[in-house]
Length: 490
Image: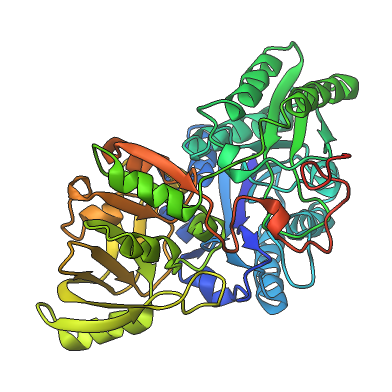
């Protein structure tokens, strides 16, 4: 039995003005053939989960092509065609296969192909034909199109946010594929896409209301004949026709049972739609409360500059508010290659004057003038050994500088954008986060696994930007209508 393994993952924020290029994938990970096995075996990622199962079975693993990039803007047409072309070329050269596992994101958008995940599956099917078993995994933030479901035999989405179950979901998908190839099951899928958006601030799966949705998934999984079931909370930073929450299930040869399961999950979510909308404090209110808190550090989640959803990682809005209110002992991480270069020229121990942050666009504050001492210079590489959101282990945020001010503020300046999934991003630089009053973290839910152990309190803040919490701030041109809460009549 020959089973192919592939992956193409990108969370595309269509409101970010900078496109994502082929080089952005190369800079993170892009592997073919045996290099895929070397990169992904044993990792806490769905690709690692695929390989866990396949390498323990009497099957021949056929590694094809796998790549992902940090969430960012729409993939350029040229980059998408090059990646898709390489994936399909590896697939053709590896035939014949008995089945295929492919890790997709579900919120991938290219300039010419809005439903990029569906397009990849269409091209894969054009090579494999319709009968060969194909199982895919998706991110919990997928915008799922009917085409994506129609082209796969089974689809498995993550069930945790932060995403700590990716390896487990990969294992689940691999077992489903092998059972299908062996003729033990005949998976059929059903998809429901109710007219609703679930706001990012309500997507923490360990707490209500999101927890209630996943409790229902566990209930559905106990139904006789159900093979798998998923909630995809959607990604409303992508202006595409399929944007919004979706619910899908796979049954063993029973299309009506699959539809019943998907509708059951939909009904539960629709009943909770009011609770699934957010209402966060403003920067002024959040900072004032953090400065007054008896114990620290208080983690202020900069929702509008959520790097894990494609933001630029250089918003100064929260840090500026801390300075305006006279705060001390704050930690903030800013993507700012220009300032890193100045610090490198100055050297460790030098006093520098910098204009930091807000250099990508005009949506995330203004550059801030600071004065301080260059305490640390680093290559920006660090390792996370615990299971964390995204399944990452090895990180590289590029050349990095730490500047400390007289007020006790620590400003980490990076030359590559990095989502704050690992506390090692801070610890590897010799900074003790628990000694700070405020930690400004550019995320929403994903960084919780990393920061919860050191946080006295975590507060989500309603900051502006390309990942702001309220979808009403965005000028959508392609989404379906109506969608609750954008239209109350939905």
